[in-house]
Length: 201
Image (cartoon, rainbow, N blue to C red):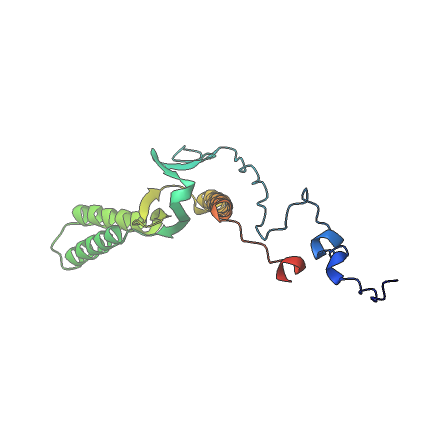
């Protein structure tokens, strides 16, 4: 007697399980996932400046600071430097009143010739001194009042030094801004990378 039971169909679970996406496409663990954190470039070395000074050594420009009449100011604490020609208003007024007073006294016969001539000469000298004036150096300091200095001599000489001082101020401020940006970039935490196609599935 033979068994007439028909053979059962193969169960789907009897076969090997289907392969997962990770098994079909293996991911190399040695490759780090990409991140969105930018890499800071190395900062260039600060520019080195040669020492410059005026003929009378009243103003000295060094690599790190500006020295005026013995007072020192760092390039980082300065915003700008300006020099311009100014006249002494007080001397002009004194010279004008002196000259006018002695002339009036001489014309009204209140003074003799010699005293009147002496007064007129003094008044003319006061006018000349006031007209000549001086060079006013103004230092603009960050967060503080501007500092003023009186400098003798010709204006073009001081203008060359102030132009070089402003160039050094801008360079030091640019270097400080680069250093601050690099420090901020280094302190920023890394951003998470977007999910991959396998993680999204």
